[in-house]
Each structure stands twice: as C-alpha cells, then as structure tokens.
Image 1 (cartoon, helix red, strand yellow):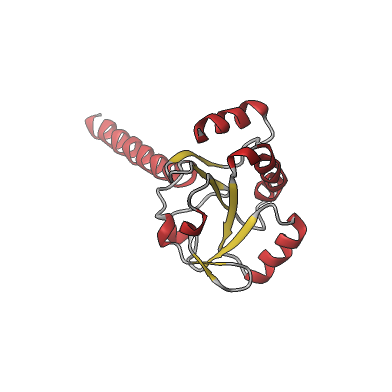
Image 2 (image 1 turned 60 degrees about the vertical axis):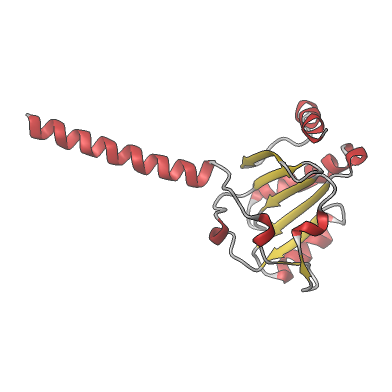
Length: 165
C-alpha cells in the first residue's frame, strides 16, 4: 500500500512539474532583453530598438502564419491612432523571411513598423504568438501579455492610456 501511495505521489509531483513548465513557457510573457535583439528593417538595414526610445512603445512578437496575430494588426493600427496624442509607436517583430514580412507590410500599410529579428524568437524565449509588451516613454514595461487582446475595447484603450501617463 505504501509503495502505491508513494508511486502515486511521485507521478502527481512530476505531472504538476510538467504542467508548470508548459504553463510558464506558453502562457507567461518571458523576460526579453530587448536591446540585445539583433533587428533589421525590411530593407536589411540594422535597427536598434533604442531608436524608438523617448516615446511609448508597443512591441508585438508575431508570426505571419498566426491567425490571431494577423487579425490583431488592424486593431493595433487603430490603437495607435486612438493614442496618437501619446505618440505610441507600434513595432511588430518576426523571425520569418524578409520577403514574407515585406508582403505583410504592404498589406498592413505604414501604421505598424515591421522588423525582422535575426535571432530566432524561440532563442529569446518567445514561444507563443502574439506576445505583446508595452513600455512607457521612460522605457518602463507597463503591460505584457501572451495571446491576442481586444485592442478596440474602450476599457483596454483607457487602461493603456493610464499606464502610459
């Protein structure tokens, strides 16, 4: 009887550990060293994320094959317009080919800045798309979330406005 209980306890502990690992990997935004990410614009020129400092910054790690990522992009463009008084910059980062990203940029217009990461997003800890971060004008992270949000929701827009103040 004691062996069975011990085996059951060990299995339960292992299951909880595995569940915690996958939850953290896919549902918790990772701590990303933003300045260390090697980025290029869609013409192949090196870009530093610091070049967007001094203004609030929304960073979205995405993939072109990710339906929720693509669906939220027009909402992100609307969010930028709604927060135009804050001078919010929206930067979308993917590690996919520049050709794919160029086609997406044409489709989405110029409201969103699309950059190519030379480093695999998995290598920087991003496993779920989209993974979004918002920084205030001082560079302090004020919001992060894995999976899409409803960027047209007036309550969320006001919450972000407050976070950027």
